[in-house]
Structures are given as structure tokens and as C-alpha cells.
Length: 229
Length: 229
DNA sequence: CTCCTTGATAGGTCCGACCATTCAACCACT
DNA sequence: AGTGGTTGAATGGTCGGACCTATCAAGGAG
Image 1 (cartoon, rainbow over the protein chains, first blue to last red):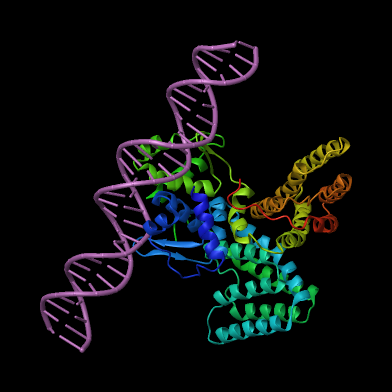
Image 2: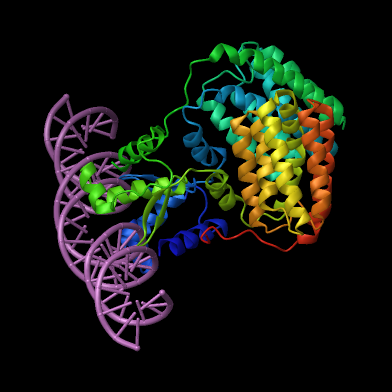
């Protein structure tokens, strides 16, 4: 019964007995420890790997990971592979969801959240001044907004969608005008800090419309196959 | 490598060589056919099972399925297990998303869609007249709205969320007043058929507020463990 | 005709062996 | 002593064969 083993390992991870980066004992030892065969243990490990909790490398051991949006994206990726309008669908989805997330964030923004938003903007400002793209910082900004909104489910879903958009290799968020992206982010952050849901909604709306205009230039890119890293 | 086998089977499913309900050959035969050991084949099958493409039953064979929201829900379920405010988060999420989905549906509703919406309402009417709950019909209705909106990604995400809500065993959608649920569904459908996005948005908003009121009575219910069916 | 038994079928688990990869310790050469 | 290639242990990946268990349908007892 590999399910029991899987749940046991999962519980160890959740309870903090196994932290991110820890190496699991060798499969042979772990199998003995659980009193099952290596086959059964491997089934359990395989499953947890698919769920993003373990990273397995031949010869290198099995390492505990913390599943983020990337892990959740795997089934979606498989399901949507070859979907013709995937990029448009994803952008449209964000268009529907993110304004509301920002509006919710505006009603819940604490002083600490405001400070974090200002920090994020400052980081972006430095990158733009250095003439660089935002990319990673941009993803972090949108995740930060979702976090301020205080809804874990929304956070995970947005992370998943971002992983899928990342597959498409689109320069989705900042487009080719980093300064414009920063300007729009500033408007979003200010509306949230001011606690103005309507302004936040509008600001995100405008930001995403800019995104939608930029993504049509990225047709033809196809999502990574499920077997690729 | 089991990844190749997995992709090969997946391709067969996508290309229609294997249709939903078909039974896969026995593992031993299939392993020979692919020229790999049964262990490797089982790894591939295991993965496709987690992705929702295969249903495996000891003694009964392996059957091809079409993955819906339930399959995508598995990683989320694992990730969100034990999350304290899961039910509230989910309802809030729908509160953010579904009004926009209905609004989009209103702008895209064709005559065929309108006919389907009317059919769905008729089925619900009969159930209510018979004094029964809506449950399954209700899920189908919300899926239908997402389908009319024409965004596959939204459809899958909503299916996933519905699967999670189903775990919570909440009488989320219809509450204890089936007639009220039907009334609200009628308002939603009419707004979509009339092509009135604002009205659709408002109708869904009201419907979900009723949901939010009913869900607070279902506290204490916990999501199914990942090992349960 | 119904119900139980029974046997074949197919997935679940186990074992032991061997292969492939990784990584670190070791040694030779400079 | 430093550098670089070599070697060997550790570890996951695959294999084949055996046996267990659940399922289901065919056949026999009532």
C-alpha cells in the first residue's frame, strides 16, 4: 500500500520533520524503515514527485521541495497542451480575476503590506534605471498583490497561471516597455495602499490591457512538452 | 524510460486511438508491446492515472478516462489540505471570478447556447417540482455558463474549484432552498441570453452572496484525505 | 431461474539482480 | 602544493520473475 507510505512521507514534510532542501534517506533504507518493498516506496516517491514535494535525481538522491505554482501547473499543462487559444485564454482569465484580487487587496492592506509594496516598487525602479527587464520582479509583484489580498487559493491559482504563461515564453507582463510596466505597477500599488478598491480595479485593468496588446506579438510559441524540465 | 512510454500512451489517447471507456491491454502485454519491463510501464500508467487520463482497478483492468476538474483538483487538494479558511477562500474566489465569466458569456451567447441554457433551466424546474435538490444539475449549470463564455482555461479552473468544494460536502450552491437557487439561475440565464453583461454580473453576484450565507453553516467539514477515492 | 462456487484475468507487491548517473575521494603528473 | 583525470561507492532506474489479491464471468448446485 503505497498510499500509506506516501501519506506518511507527506505528513513528515508538513510537520516539519523534513524541510525543504533535506535529503531523503536512500530508497533501500527508507523501504526497510517503512517495512515495504522498494517498489512500493518508489511508487509513493513517484507520486510525491509529481505533486512537487520531492525532486528525484538518479545518482544524486531525493530532495524535499516546496511545491509552488509550478507543481500545480503540471496537470494543467498536460491538459491544455496543444490548446489553440491558450495564451489568449490565460490573459483573458487574468483580465477577469486580477482586478478583483487587487480590489480585495485594497480593502485588506495593512501597514506592513504597504511597506512591502513600496519595497517592491523600489526594486523595480532600480532595475528599470539599470536598463533591465522586470520579469522576475514582475511575477513577484503580482504574487505580492495576491498575498495582500489574503486568499491562499487565489495565490495558488495565479501562481499556476503564471507558470503556464512562462511556458509560452511570452514577454507578457512588462512587454517591451519596462518603464510603462513600472508606471502601471506604481498606480496599482498606490491604489491598494490608499485602500481604494475601484482605483485598484481600474489600474490592473489598464495594466492587463497593455499586456493583451503585447501578447499578440508572441504567437506561434508553444507550451513546453510535459516531458521537458 | 517511462516518460517516453507515458507520452506514447498519452499521444494514443489524444489522437483518438484510445477513447474514453476503452480498456488498455493488460500491463504484461503492454509492457512487451513497448519493449519495456512491467515496472517501467507501471510507472507510466501511474503518472497518467494521477493526471486523470487512466482509471486503474485491481482485477478490473485499466480504463481510459477524460480528465476533468477532478483530476486537476488532486494537487490542489494535497496542497490545501488542512488549510483553515479553505471554504471561505473558495467561495470568495468564485465571488471574484464567476460574475466576470457570466458577463463574458453574455457577450458571446449564441442561439444554440441560449437553447442549452433554457434546457438546463427546464431540467432544474422539474427537479424542484419533484421536491429534490439540484446538486448535480447545479454543477452542470455553472459549467455550462463557463462553456458559453468560451474560455477553456476558465472552464477547467472552475471545474477544479467545484471538485474542491464538493470535498467540503457543503451544500454550497443550492443551499436549503432549491426554489431560490432556481430563481437565481433563471435570472443569470436570462441576463446571458439577453446579452446583458452587467445584469449577468449582478445576478451571479447575488447568487453567490446567497451561497456565502449558506456555507457558514457547514463549518467543521474537512476535505477528504488525498488517499480517499 | 437464482445463487454460490470456481477459475481465469489483471492489477498490487515483493525480491534480487544489474545498469546508469552522480559525486567525492584518491592518485598521478606537473 | 596545485591541478586534473581516475576510480569507486552511493543512489536512483530498470529488469524479470514470482506470488498475492481483487474482479468478473462462466458454470454448476439448489
